[in-house]
Length: 548
Image (cartoon, rainbow, N blue to C red; front, side, top):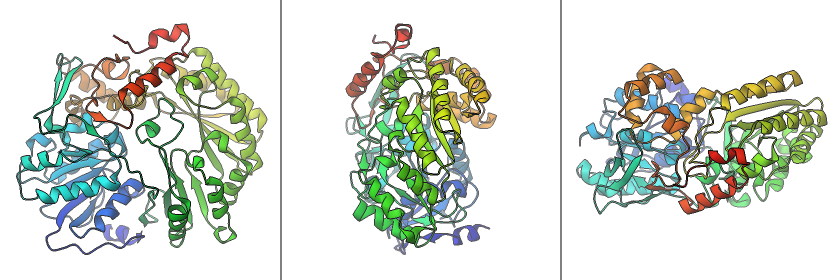
């Protein structure tokens, strides 16, 4: 079974034959193969490792794996989804490696992790990793391997101290966290000695050649898709958005030297093309790219595009997508309330949303999916009414277009101006209100689970004390009930669920990720926060984080 899965792969790179003394390394994705191989980040890092002759890399998924080395020196995980931590702990146990870094000895491999989840806030998972790579893998990975080779035969202690000197490499065990009380706020986060940098800076790749698939396979969750990263980050900077703030600055792939050659390479092996990025249509030469894909020679190509900015939905875009077998388009509108969009810095007006729907229909698309959010800081009940009214107007303006409103609950994210806000306890009720109002209008309303938002907020704002909780919940199952049960068991030893999830934190308090520097300094985030709260109405004023 295993070999047939790997033999179905069509590689777009040439693996190297490793040297005799190459480092035996396992690179894992903590989920099934079909999910892991669809992750562009995982594909690119694996290909980078497979093209080095100083590394012998084997892939490991929860269901299948390549032949694994008997004594791996390094085991790495790429993490794209928070709840996959359960699979990480299971995979470590299956390799007979202690799940806590503090219990590992010189004979055990170094365990590293990277990817969006750990770059955002690694702290809840910090005790399970020896090394965490913060930021873009392009340069970081090579720096990590090069530094490791220097200390390959040294003790674990020396290896970790040496690696901690490399920008972007975070060694959690070399930082001590003190708390005001066992279940209180953080008092300080300090390196254990003077040689260790006090702040670890996330690494940013600044080139104009972005990622593209290194493998195409029918066994992927998106069958036979070839993915090309068109842009990285997003210039809009909506104040809740991790995908924008954490990955700044906004970078675009060069059309001539990156995008077109990559697309030509991919379309030689498959007819399915995916354009990726937080805001693909904001590439300065997006129209030219569309014209290129619209050539008759690509008539049999199926095109998928990640979410697009509302005011870039032209008839031409809709037409190209419809001709390329895409029936639907996704736009993020967040709310129908102009006030809320000012609070979050969403530069968008209702008439632009209506125009997008009209253009989508005129270009031949059959459905439009809008993304909304409830519980945005400063939201009042009348803001919900404005969302319902907006959806009604969109439906009236483009009759016959199938409308879906997917809706999540606001979750605070590290390194964004809204990291100090808690989750609004009214959010669940507000999702139900929208459901009740929109269903009779014939609008398909798809709320994201409120309970999942609670777990997400817990992991997104968590600190190291949560590792004990995560070990418990792993045995209880991944429902919100399990987390509540684990909190009960740990009462007095860690703060309660409310502290992590619903409390508005003081802008003076030390955040779990204070020693990890994202693209913008805290002072800039505070300015953006002040600008947001200046639009709050008086009744929402008490929701502000406290300036103690």
